Length: 132
Image 1 (cartoon, rainbow, N blue to C red):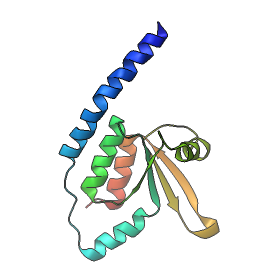
Image 2 (image 1 turned 45 degrees about the vertical axis):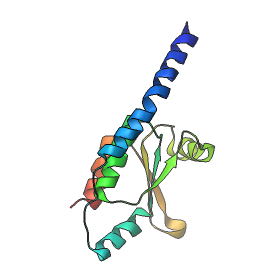
Image 3 (image 1 turned 60 degrees about the vertical axis):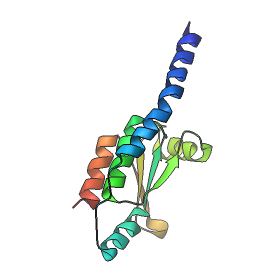
């Protein structure tokens, strides 16, 4: 019985995934407008961020839409289909849970890494750091 339930939910996910991705594409807001100097500064700050995500996760979609609205160029890492990123998330972040924002501060040997889980916390952090 458990096998049939799992297969049922996998089928549901296979059917819904394209619709979720199309809806994301259609409803993604336009980016904030900044001067070239401000955008260059934001892009440099975004180099220290990486979003671990699953493509069709509704909470990841929520975070990606907010990233687009804020005009941020954050690297997106697919932890569902890329074993390297999944292992990084497991070993360094402590758990395979998405979305997860990896925040690197400092440089060289003195850099520190913070792993921020929960879509609401990630969006709040992005607003505090990059919002206008």
